[in-house]
Length: 254
Ligand SMILES: Nc1ncnc2c1ncn2[C@@H]1O[C@H](COP(=O)(O)OP(=O)(O)OP(=O)(O)O)[C@@H](O)[C@H]1O
View 1 (tube, rainbow, N blue to C red):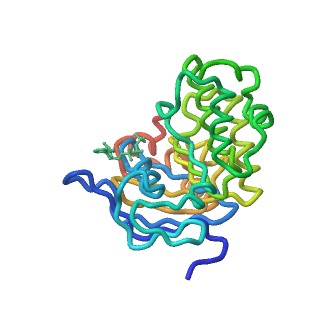
View 2 (tube, helix red, strand yellow):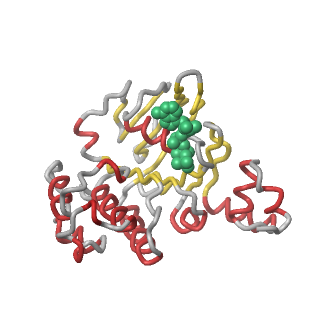
View 3 (cartoon, rainbow, N blue to C red):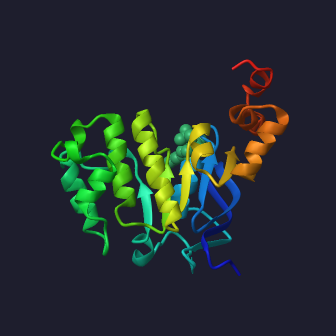
């Protein structure tokens, strides 16, 4: 029995590529109006976890509920997909469509999309609306991908390293939009390598290391632990993962 405000619950998710176990018995839940930041070193399994939850790759799990609906295998029914936003990778969009054409195209998949003009304004894309996607800078492309992820006003949103390559102004704009979505009830799973981003946005921090959940804390507990131990969040993160860098960092060498 899961709580009424639980948007995602997965138990014991495992994924193997060939003989390699990339995720091992990962369990996770996300509530409405909650931002969960998933942290972990390169290759830890963060993207694989998102892809597995979305059914973009085959994985094994004891139980998976999305928006209150039990799902099995790789299938995610259309009505579920319509309520889930995903920030995709850059290569997944047609380089020869303009920004407006991309947003028009994706908006047409949904029943109640945000008006494209307002979406462009919110994501600071109005001035580049006639430019081909392939001609945009890295940060501008990220903004388009973010706009597509939120265009259907999703109940559950997956953001995989959303601020990669974004300038400071754009990052802050996106953070504000993420907070607004959360305040409207959206549950958000965010992977990031930036501790300040997790600190700014997350209600809960989940650390994945070598395919396993190494730690899971409320963001408030994580900050408190750092304070109690006289460490920065980055130092506490490094010592939690037990990876090289932790020893130097805890002696104050950055
Ligand atoms: N299609 C694939 N075939 C084989 N191995 C894969 C495949 N996709 C991912 N992997 C491996 O799975 C592991 C987890 O990769 P994943 O992309 O999930 O890591 P990540 O935590 O998102 O890393 P990063 O922070 O670098 O983005 C890595 O060792 C990667 O090499």
